[in-house]
Amino acid sequence: MRCLKLLGERLMARTPDSQTAELQIGAALLNRFTALSTPETTRVA
Image (cartoon, rainbow, N blue to C red; front, side):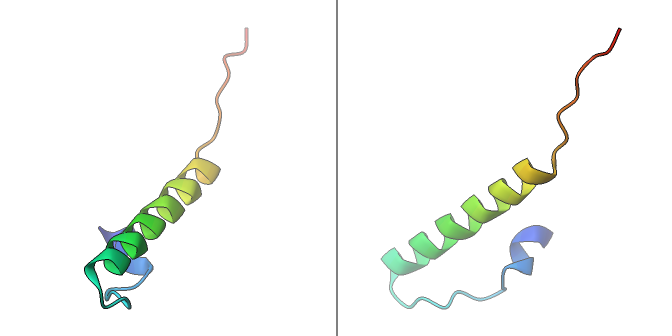
């Protein structure tokens, strides 16, 4: 939840459909940021 609040604590959209889209975009951004910061580990030897 802390990371989700970094994107903004309030929804800017007014209609329920737009609010849903706004939340989905925020979740996709967080997932992308997490994927970029997760290191790929490989076993050596």
